[in-house]
Each structure stands twice: as structure tokens, then as C-alpha cells.
Image 1 (cartoon, rainbow, N blue to C red):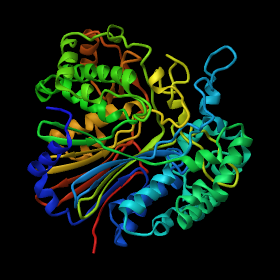
Image 2 (image 1 turned 90 degrees about the vertical axis):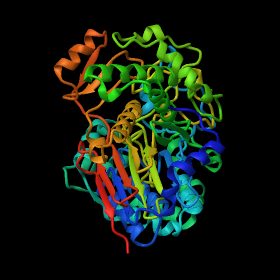
Image 3 (image 1 turned 60 degrees about the horizontal axis):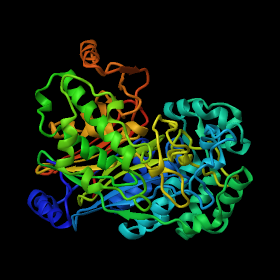
Length: 563
């Protein structure tokens, strides 16, 4: 059963359900990330005596170099941390913020329509980056090694280069035509003006200089001084609105995670401005009375899709930056509210989304090309982190001399009431553009703790992140390990468009026909989605398992033997 848990009850649950966990860690460490070179960077730091939080900084920075399509120093993210010695969890919010000069209608043309090119391509599309500030914050508050040591692997990779893999090549094909607008940007990521061959080496010496300034000067090395000047001047020269004051004023936020319980497991997951934790909690609460394991495939998918539909409707209605929007968290996570939603659900028939109409004065939106890693050290410290620049390669623009790709997270705001963003998510006033505001996200880094096992799970995938993590959690609770979670066939419903979308081959023809008989529209996608990474700890044996999504071959998952 899911419920909002106050601080006293959280302590009692921890004492009763996981007391044994705090006594002894797993004696080894495990990392799963979307690039084997980033996983190696984290293992290098663990080998040097760093803890999970040190390793998380190294992995994050390395991903910023070798996976620029998905994250970077010009982006942001959420780092969900669990410190075993105190049994304390916190979400470090390094989400980007809107520049001070941003306005609600900044992406509308003269006819009042959204100019999608301005919203996603080039300098005007970027929010103020939060990732470097989060790295410094985590290193200084939770780590044990100097920042210069944690960033050393990433600096090496930027200077010496990394080989192009299939994911890099596929996604730069998607964005190359935009990147070619800025020759200095294309020179880094499209050497010779061509999409590089798999195995070709990409070097980014300007990014190495930027990272070295951060390593030597801490926060000031990025948010003030020469690096900040180059970033701001480059963005302004290309039509953007960043200022040095925006950089000086950026602050990391620490937020209390969303905590719920389901069938004897405690979930610790992302809080707003992520919509993921609340949505996952709602979906689990809605389906809690039902025997999912005993259902037919069609009935199970139908029930979960109906829960997804209702949670995404509420996501649109109520969620945004908690520093700007009054979010009714207690109501959304209450048993009574879920029971009310459950009364609108029929097991024999799909509920059209139009019958769950949202008040257009309150609707909100979201984000995607993204990355995730899961990490645990030998003391039981945990990091589940999801990082992003939004679309592949962000805005496809790097201010000259920085090597930093600007994000295009401003598209995660609602540029116009009711207008879908790049991922089909609609938005209204709760997620409207305001100076200093953090845009809503679906990133859902999650930790699940039971009496005998702990899971660390998350994935990229834009609006589908939430449902992928939901399916992974259910698979873990069903008794399966990370190889199973990351490989599961995926299906998704997000309220609008009113359809169940599935990966090709995820459901058989009979199940699809049964769902259509219930009134669902089922859309089979040719492309897979997500890139999930999971770590699991067996408390009794101390065994660790780590797995990366087989959909992309570039991932790296290791169990690290420590001296």
C-alpha cells in the first residue's frame, strides 16, 4: 500500500525493514552506465578509495565527454543519493533554469504560433546549465576525494578522444543538419563536415580546458571567470539571452525524495521538478489491490495503461517546479485519492482520455535525450542518477572555445498553452516559462529496498521514462534481477495522445487484438526506446548484480572487486 510518509514514519520503516542493511555493506561495488568508458571512470575512482558519491561525479563527467548526445556540462540532471551510514536519502537537483530574460511567449512568432526551430535549435533554446554545479556540490558535501581527481578521467577522455559508437553515430545523423549551422560546433562533433564512421576518434580539447578550470577552481571555474565569459558571449552572439548574472545566480537544490511503499518494499524516488516519483507512486497505488501476476497479458497491460493514463493526466494538471507551483503532493499520493481514480476504471473497457479531461488552466509538460547510471559502493552508499540535455546533442550549438554543447531544455516548458512539445506532451500555466524556474522533467532515478534485496534503477527515454521505471520496479518485486528489468519489452500510455505505444514484438497479436477489443488504440513503434541501467544487492549473501540495456551495445556494467 502506498502512502505519504512523514519523517517519523520513515525512521520507523527504516528501523524495522532495513536495520540489517545498515550494519554491513555489500563488500564490493557495482556500476552500470550507458558507456563503458564512463563505467571505467567510476571504477577507477572506487579503486582509489573513493566512495559512491565520488564515483558518481567521475561517471557524470565522463558521460559528459563520451556521450554528448545525451548529457553534458551544458545540461543538468537529478542525482538520488543514499548515505548508508545514516540511512539518509536526498535528491540533488541540478536541473537547468530559465534565464532572467526569459518570457512566457519567447518562442511565439508574429502569428502567435510556436516557432519550434527557435525552441529546440541554437543558443536561444538553452536553460542555465546545472550539471557542473551539481558535480561540485556532490563532491564537496558527500565525497572524500578532491574534485581534481574526480574529473581527471573525463579530462583525459576529452584530450585523448573516444571512439564513435553506434549510438553516437545514429543520433548525430539525426542532428547533423542542425549542427552544420555553426561551423565551430560541427568541427568538434562532425570532423571534416561528415558523420564520423564507427570507431573514429572524437577529441574535444576545448572541453578539456573547461573541465580543467572546474577541477582547479571548483564552481567558480565554470560559473564565473573565463569559462563563463566564453559561454555567455558565445550564446549572446548566436542570439541567446544568457548573462553572467544568470550563471552567478545558479544554485543547486537539495530535495526530499518521494517515499512510498508497495507490497513490502520501500521506494525512494525523484521528487518535483521531476514528475516521475509522484506518477510512479500513483500508478502503483491504483493497481495495488489487483493480482497483476494472475492476470492475462491483455488484462495486465490494460490495467497498467489505465493507471498510466490517470497519472499522466495528473502530471499535466498539477506538476511543475515546486519553488514556483503549489503541488498537492499529499492529495496525489493519498489512498483515498487513488481509490477515487480507481472507481473510474473498468477492467473490460478503456477509458477515453477525453472523459478524463484536464482543466486547461492547470496543465504542465516535460524532457528527453538523456542518460542514466546506477551505482553502489562497498559500504552500501547508493547513487541513482538521470542526466539530460533534452534532444540528442541538445541545441546542437557549442559556444566557441568551450567545447560545451548547450542544452535545449527550454522546450520542456510550455511554450504555448495546449501546444505539444517535441515529445507530444502538452502544457499550460503550471509549467509556463518564468525567469529562474526549473522546467518539469520525467527523469525518475529510483531506489527500491526490501528485506532481502535492494534495487537501483533508472533510464532515459523522455515521457516514457516513468512507465519504463514502473515496469522495471514491478519486475524486481516479482523476484527478477537487473538483466530482466533492463531487457523487458516496453509499453506506454501518457494520457495524450490517447494510445498504448509498444516496442515491436513487445506484445503478441492476440494480446494486441484483446486490447483493441477493449477500446484501446495500439501503436507499434519500429524503434525501441530507453537505455535502462540497474544494480541489485542481495543483503544476505552480499552478492551484487549489474546490467545495462541490451538495446545499445555501448553500455558498461561491472561489479568492482575492491582491495
